[in-house]
Image (cartoon, rainbow, N blue to C red; front, side, top):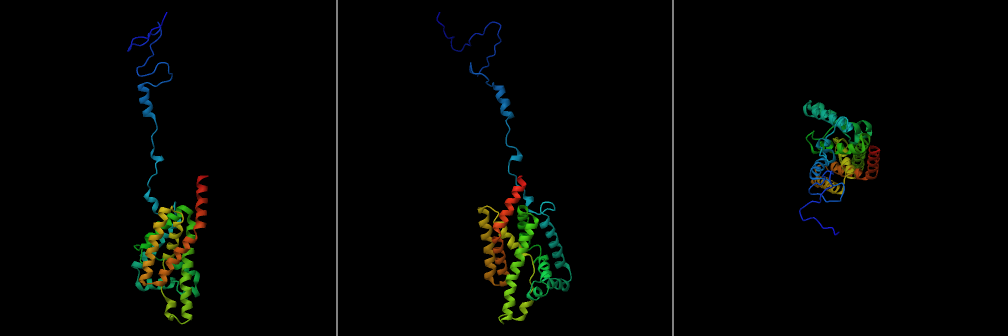
Amino acid sequence: MERTAPPPGTAAPTPTGAPDTHVPGLLDGVPRQRGPGERAVAEVRQPGPTAGSRRRLRPWRLLPTPTGTPFTFGYALLLCLTSLIAAHADPALVHALLQGSSTDVTHLVRTPELVLVGSALWVAGGVTSPFALAFVLVLTALERRIGGARTAGVFLLGHVLATLATEVPVGLAVLAGHLPDSSLHRLDYGVSFGVAAGIGALAGLLPLWQRLPLLAGFGWMLLQDLLAYADPMTNWGHLIALGIGVATWPVVRRWYAARLGVAGA
């Protein structure tokens, strides 16, 4: 006997005694389909992007902290203290302290270790100077990438080498008679050489789109200061210190990679 299809719009009869399991909107003969209610529940339960999976902006990481960046934090507190002394102490006392910390030729010949350390305890221009702000931001960023001891090493390398590179020629020029004897006692102190070296080193750890503007902007500022010829020895020292920081790129990049490897282990 020939089988005939049921009229359109009618469902096939179910055997007697069998429950009617047909759900509107599903295809017959295809197993494990979700009904409308199940689809709604599944859509609700699908996990979306969580707050932890998004890259959060944490502007407070730009500033030093006692636990995250102890070297920069402690050093910044010390510079704040000496800046308060320079601003509020007796001017004669302040001048004596600065003169005793100066890395001029006379002091470098007599007590090089003392003045190389002592000159780095002051900020020329106080805590409102551009180099004071750069000190906080640059050394914090560098310390978070390579650690406190290595950041201190980069800072001291730039501070010491740039100081010697500018003061030794002064001493030689005085001996040759090209400069007066008063040049042996020029007041020279501050953290700017170390900060310039830190900027150069940090640039090597940044992506290209951040590295080029940093070097171009800071380098242009230093060139403008040099062309103004207000303090050529110090201005040359800043450029030399920046070059010293750039020269440390192979080393600081290895330190950074090693630190990332330890953190990811």
